[in-house]
Amino acid sequence: MRSCQKPLYRKKLGKIDGWRVTACRAAALDTGRIAQVSWYSCGEQGRLGVLRLHCINGTPALIHAVAWIAARRVWPAWLIAICSPLALAQPSITDLNVLSGGSPTYSYTTGISADGNVVTGYSSSAAGQRAFRWTAAGGMQNLGVLSGFSLRSSGQALSADGSVIAGVSTGANNTARAFRWTAATGMQSIGVLGTGSASYARAISADGSIIAGGSYTSGFNGATAVRWTAATGMQTLNGMPSNAASITSNGQIIAGTFSDAEAFSRAFRWTSAAGMQDLGILPDADSAEANALSADGAIAVGYSGDQFNLTFNHAFRWTAAGGMQDLGTLNGSDFSVANAVSADGAVVVGSSNLPSGDRAFIWTAGLGMVDLETYLVGLGVDMTGWVMNSATGISADGSAITGYGSFNGQDRAFLLRGVPTCGTGVLGDGDANGSIDGLDIQGMINAVLIAGGSGGGASCTYDLNHDGQVDATDVELFIGVLLTSG
Image (cartoon, rainbow, N blue to C red; front, side, top):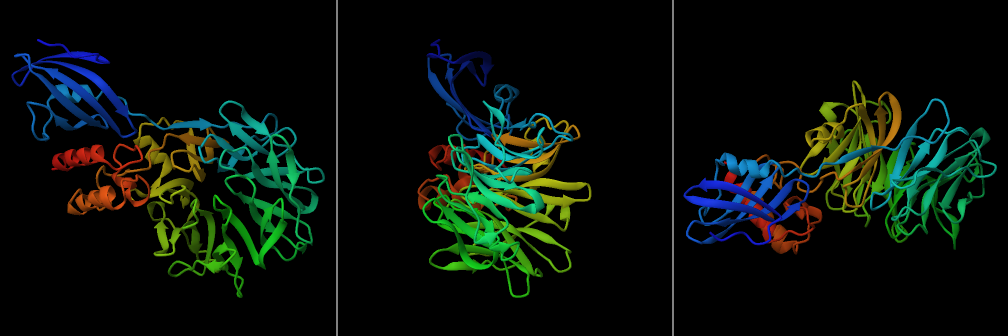
């Protein structure tokens, strides 16, 4: 009997369906929810057959071999045994801890770098509340305060690589200045409009050169959204009562909130060419606020609700084509808010209020809105000691999420990494209608042919092996899931 060539793993499986088989794992790809393995089967009469097995969450999904022509609906124990040891990559949660000193101790996050490796926010410290920059290698770094505004500080946003941070440093009587921080320059004020008493930085472009936020123009009067560059200094977007909360990667589109003639909050999207565009409100709402933009500014997220009676707020996702989409709430509660969105707009995170308190959520078209903590437990993450109150930032690809909650009774910032967000829900059910059917077949065809094979955007749910492309491997996996779905 011929042997398998250069196996990474060899296992004698005995006589199976008339074959005396030695199976070798010649290649393996662990991509979150799917482990794809190639096995080489050597037959009694010197025949060498190739058996390709796809393991999904520890269960065989599709197999090709000389002895098997089509996918099987009932798998023998030996096939399940092959799949079960292939542990799928699990997300991880990190307690970002706190700066030294301070009582009580706490930390909260407000932003995350595009690659998910750098986080900013604020923490208790021996000197009071201080802005921080966190990395796995360096831990939590105290960014200090501005001279004359030394009561407290907070980091609010980071450049794509995390090397530039924007935020606010606050002094006596609520006076404040927006700042820009780098390792080389430290914390530097970016000024204020006119004779205003305070300015705030809320967002920053990918290269760190453009900052958006708000400033008063005279004392604590005339609060208005602003855009700052080193060349132009701080400039108002249009002078009306407003505040900027998010900016696109290139710094050309800004989102935030303005006050209408009746003093209700309205979400806006701003460009230099079109000015402020009112994004509208949800049904039965009287107000809305925009908190974040996709990388290209085509998608905005935030919340809309009843500002007058305070009876409800619902998270929304806005596009020019579809308008404002209600993302719902957790467990039918009345309140939710979307805080951040992935670069392609496919993954939204935020918080929703429950009787037991605020809870962080994650939303995708396939998942809908789900409790982030419950979602992680379902993926096998040990969440002992954690209560996740809010998700405040997300990496460009959606795989890293930051936020805050309670860990062993202490207020703590967290960082999640390795979160599967593409093709989540029922595998192969790209339209999330609860079944794998003809609509999904058409969806897979569209993803491969019409979307050009890109694994982003709408085709994300058909990138079943999460490699960024919808290709023949995904089609093969989809066929296997379709045949075994019953």
